[in-house]
Image 1 (cartoon, rainbow, N blue to C red):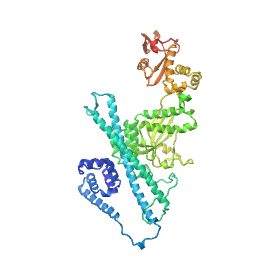
Image 2 (cartoon, rainbow, N blue to C red):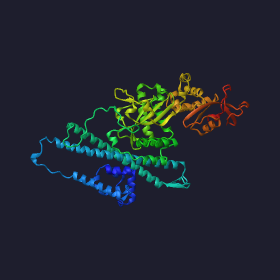
Image 3 (tube, rainbow, N blue to C red):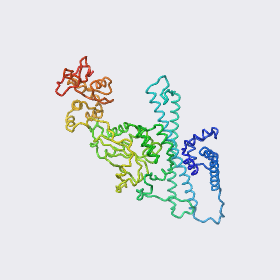
Image 4 (cartoon, one colour):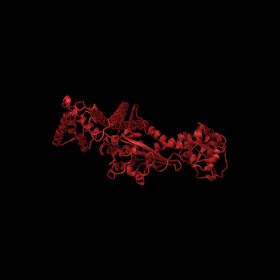
Length: 584
């Protein structure tokens, strides 16, 4: 296994590349093992019985025939050695067996089972990683074709898309169906591999418990190194990894071999996958020394290139906890201590659903085939447990007071932490640690809400009104030319039908010359554009007081209502009721 790994590494070939070379070489006559099977074989599972496969891999990976023959002979020699080790040992004479109560034989059996289980777990983790990557690629391709289909179909059942060379190509409904079938198969293979990995982890834990129960110490009569019981995980106190290199992960994570830097990373950069700008390309290229981190960064950029999805996730999590329709709350500072603690959990669940992230094997998410944790803060730092050392972590910070949020990616290392810790051993990032964060999106604005922008006195005057309808009308009067969201309406009315109150306010305020616009109505959007107002987003509202255009309003944008030009009123203009067309 190690020899084949060394051959693949020197040839800079991933398992997927080797599988494709074996397929095109035609050496297996249609009986080529599946990619997942190849992954398990290359992890050492059942490899000693695959001489033909080993020789074929050497031939396709090594173009030099002389060197290929040398390596093939070396591989065959290793196979013979493995076969001889498995040969049945000579049985000792009955009287020569020491009377140890059978504990030695049991210890040997458990340790061998532990070694086999570790090999199975390594293969299962690698298979799960490969299947997750295949699933992500298939899902991205199907989504792209569906989007292209939504943009326009020149003929029934076919989608035309421009090619880089100019002519267009068509994707039929049959081909799209095949892609969906491929996606379903990839996801099924991923789920199966994850189940196998979980089962192997369970067996591994049982085997380690048996070894611990047998009291194995420094003296090992079998010659096999048995794992020693471990206590609570602690932060390392000495630095063992070279500066600028990734710290070693835990035993299970380190058993998953990362692909060479020129496979997934360079392919994503060349094809533009997951990269939104030239800056994104440079950030991915600069991280080739940490392939896992670079792949996760590229995938997060692909899933949310402009940050709009993540901004909506954070805003939605806050609104869920505020529950404005029942509480009238609109600021995170109004949350209870317990609710503030749950804000990070709410962001985690919504982020997983919005971005379609699978559960991690050990941490929160599986992103680009790698385990990734997520930490959230409303301040400027995060708390990291010692067991997260060497792992990847998405760090998210947001504050509705400033209206800004950020998300970055970090490889957690002991040297990036402050020395102090809490009772659970958790530590915060040092200044050096904060500089080590690779920001995916930094200081982007959260979705705006009118109640957060208004002064405290104005908000107090709005909530001083007795009824939800009166508070809604006061909001439109006090917050003119300000986008008003459904969350604002829910908080002001403290009712589930805040939108209904807005529609009623549209008719009531028209008699005072105030036009209430709704972004879901095409006519209102045209009026907002004609008056030179900010663009109306769907499901947002905006109010503005109008007046008939007079000689003193030359050059002011106007709209026609019942054949009369109207424009935005000046503060000194008198209130003039709007015509019926304004609220019909």
